[in-house]
Image 1: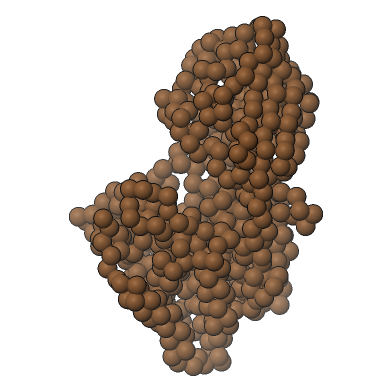
Image 2: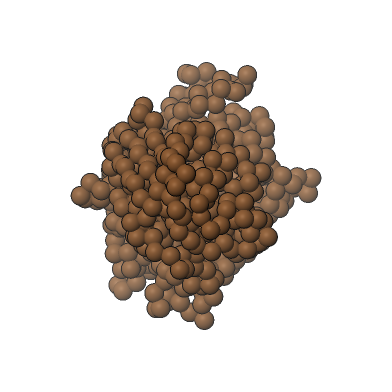
Length: 571
């Protein structure tokens, strides 16, 4: 049983103390001489990082799940801190930018899936032969159409891939093999893999079937896909009440076990065995029409949820550049109450994911406010956005990216703060996105001022650059960088990478990402290095905000090529 270090009364006293510390840090600060133009750079306060983190990671907030009372409390706390610091309101309702979401869950009526071939009609069993998810576009969706095999279902002009070559899929259901990005750079591969259904929609398909493979079975058995494939899905709603990102054109979708798929290919020119043999040989199978018709149906139950982004601003001082913005982002949500029966804890507190990132952002905002009050405001304006629903698919940030509270073309850079692992005295940092824009140079200079090295991505296969909120702004052509603590510890007897990996394996998205467990297992959070992490992120933004030239994409950046305007690309 997990140890508890505080009684309920002690917890509440600790929360009150945490809030009091933050208030006193600001209220008791000496009055600044605003006539001093070149005031020294402020320093992050470890006690402030600790106070914010302890409140946001408390049991009181019940894991800050999107749309819950706990997340509303965290949002109110963040807005109150912005107000205390003197940040300008930058939402659509004061500091708030409220977002409407639709959550969809499959109804009790099980989905159906059958295929008709020359040799007969075959019905597939839900959860045994196939799985599917709810549809956020419509409550009842049905489709019956001819099938077309499209290989991996990938298209990329950059990499010379067109798996749809030679076939017409308009008003057809496509069936694509899982994977297909092996051998490509990891970040680009992650982006391409996420575009499969969009490529089908662009060519007129009305359904999409992903085919599980023997190779995939060895890595992630079909049974595991079944466990997670039918969970709730969420999308943000536009002003017309439509679910963004869910194309109503795709009436059916399924993830199909290869052991049930042989009948699809029985009367076709290529057998399923020959396709798998081609895959094993490293070949890309050609697309072809199947002599089969699939019929799919599913019913979904909708729930509407309302949850805020919280946005504050420090206005720039330059009469021209103040109309350009640097935006710091950090997601304020987590995954809520636990369903883990191996522990007595019922709360996924999310201390490092991402109470730590929000705490760093709040202290960064305070430093800007202090500097501005001392007569040294940034030239460009600075936005601070605590975004919701990151854990649901980067949805709060994506809503902001499509509904920005300032002109999207005026946002020149994004500095994202997500899950800094503050469990050891890091000697280096990793900046995801550093190779795509000149922000990499800025990060290196900022870290160097604090004697911290900038290291290359130690796990490129994870494609982390595409997996956090900044990526929604990258897709709008905005250069972005996302920092994490590096794998080198200043303690020679400690392996920072081992600590990072152990946290990810044992505590990430589990009740163990809480203050008592992190103290018991790792000796506690290093708030002094949380302050150092804040200092570095502050310095990154300061250089961006005060430079004559806005950040730019590098000419060989894949994301710069597909998302950026020509004016934001430099040699």
